Image (tube, rainbow, N blue to C red):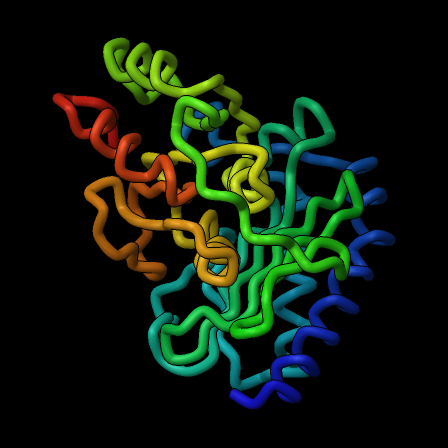
Length: 264
């Protein structure tokens, strides 16, 4: 795709994201929460309405584009063919409901299976992280420098300890400098993108949880693989790691020593 075409789409997406600044406060003020698979699997009117607004945006401006998203049936979507947007309208719904912070909107644009545009919009902090294929990664328009390669002993790492066995947790604690967990795959990944975390590990992401990270990792020289150190399929997802190059292999060695983690 030509650079001019990409930049035009990027401008339109940024304009659409800016409209959420007027929509989200009212949605939160009238927030209604329901559950899906269990009492911890939450969905709100905020998720559903944001996704609906984006669907209408695509129908108006890019009717030939497909939408592969969390709050819809995706049976007819062919994610590896043509122009496809993958969306998580609210990543970190529990954080939204319980804290009203640490949540984001994730958008990834793929052309014939190739990540081409990426967005992670941290609405509470009014911060947009984005990438344009071949043209770098940016936060609020400022170029993000490539994180320096560092060993695990000097890095903070992020993972959900509830899906790790005790031996693995202790091994990761011992090997890393420290541990944090935000509870939003997008925002935990943003910390890696900016070099604040060395790695984020997620054993149960869906395609919309990681749609934006592919291109951000590519543009910033980060590692993003399965936990078996294989290429990650954007359309099916599965256990993954996004990490600083300097700690990638050491973390995977710990995770794969015995029954290190659970997959749901």
